[in-house]
Image 1 (tube, rainbow, N blue to C red):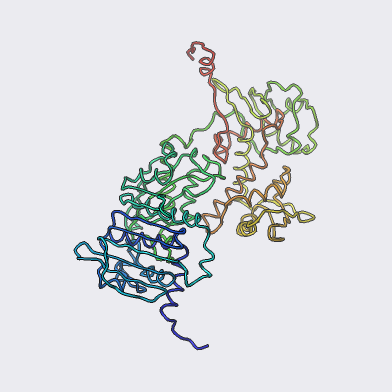
Image 2 (image 1 turned 90 degrees about the vertical axis):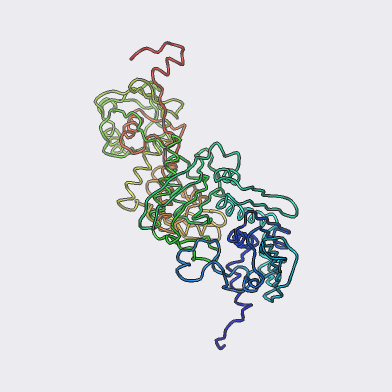
Length: 601
């Protein structure tokens, strides 16, 4: 077949494949055009979820009659005129593709009038065929109507989802634009029913409206600035971020805007999560709307026609600024704990705590208040059942780890809590949370040096991970291999596990339990920062699975070893999921509880 030029109509339909994905993308392009035209109020009306009708009306500057034909021509725009303009684009639109693309796959009508004109003018495009412009009735501003979307591309139309689903996507598109333009009024209606009605308002009020009024007490204000000469000016960050109590099961209420435009960037989302590390369970998602202001020369918006992807000149600087801005907001609320719990006066242990499966079933016969004593004494303690799963060498290592010169009184309560007498009061410790933190930091230190040891299975274990899990597991394969987990697809829903981390095998954690938990997560490894976050979250998961649980009986030697490790880790106050590991009751607290006068000390 000879090489030939494609007709303009086919070129526009090809371009429409990227620009016009569904009704929401049409609404986004038209509303952004309205904002570029200086509109103070934008109204969007839908019928049939936008598949039958999209009508966008604005009170902006309007389009001159002689420019209407150019407006529906591909690569014609009033936003930029040179490469220098493209390098520092500050408008929402600039590619000049949207209207031509929409007109190639739908019936498009534009009616526009400038403030000084006697009447409006209208132009119509149907499947790429242009009619007009001609005089029409209309108020100052512009009305764009898009009817029967994908009417001449039935294969695209049948892939649209239900009316409710498409309306929901349009709602999200309006929210994303409205966040970046709080001074503009927006209205969205579907089949005559009003869904969104936002008056012009300040930034925080707009955030509360979009994120949900019920979250208002948990939304913290951000105000941060970082000088960045490399980016031709400072990085300014404002907006709101929810406390850990506002976290949601999905990432739907997460908004990042650069220079007023909503964008998607996993590395910047990772920066927010890093600020929450240790404060929140990794299985939930923080709520936020962050407004990032950069010099336009520091960000390339011309990455994809949808303009939701950007390329930053110095992404590490922006990542650092976001992390610090969110961390500072949390600190102001007192949500970043920096102080350490009082430490038990033991020497630093030489080996990690070897709490194995068998050890969890051991309990001292007396079951009462215990003393941490030097090894020779502690080794004589009786036990109600043997430590079958722990080698003599492992027990000796455990006891050496807690050799102490001074006794510390403690007791286990309900096989879940450890009560320790320390200083002027008591510390109540969650044994699972503290052990999880110890194991997490141990695993982090080990993985920084070498991949974790693995144990090869004699027969591969087949694990049903559910639909869609194969792709997620395969994307994480390099990370899982470092951790000692080797697996391959064995069907549409099934993974064959060939080796497991020895760390988990020794603690009775099976392949099914571990892999299903990974498959249920939303981990990604698309770039180095996302991979780093994924690795940390899998280490969190490993530590959680392997740690002692509420209900596990610990020997006095095991408890003493756990208390000794508390003084050697970086964050003894919080487990990796962000839950507290302990709380203090001082003697003064106890006296107040019992109605005694607080004695001077």
